[in-house]
Length: 151
Ligand SMILES: [Zn+2]
Image 1 (cartoon, rainbow, N blue to C red):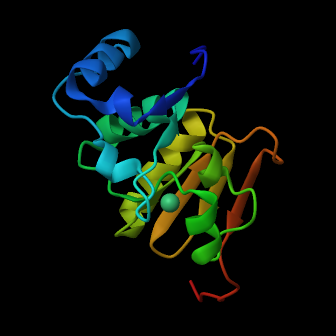
Image 2 (cartoon, rainbow, N blue to C red; image 1 turned 180 degrees about the vertical axis):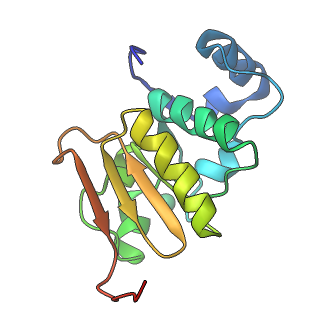
């Protein structure tokens, strides 16, 4: 995707502007991500990469069901409070975590992300993180914790 990136802020999520954004990105108008889904749960601040928003919408269209965001933008304070790594891509509005309920979900989401060229992916038991933070190493897929599974 050759979209030039920029940062969306809360104002960009007002309905009229969001409609215009969907128009620009050639995304359908049936569903959107609301600012409440992506903002910092502690202060309501919102910065979100336009490119990441596009990928998230495309993921939603690909999986054909709602994509539940478990963490989007985090201010530095909130990020530190919940034990996020310093300079987390979440604090730059360049990262998102989405809920994973089943192994089938996990497969579909990963399949989409890899095919979309997303090259920074973290896999937890119940969510998948992906980000566009090009100041960090890529391509990488990491896991959270060291639990061993017998499969
Ligand atoms: Zn905050």
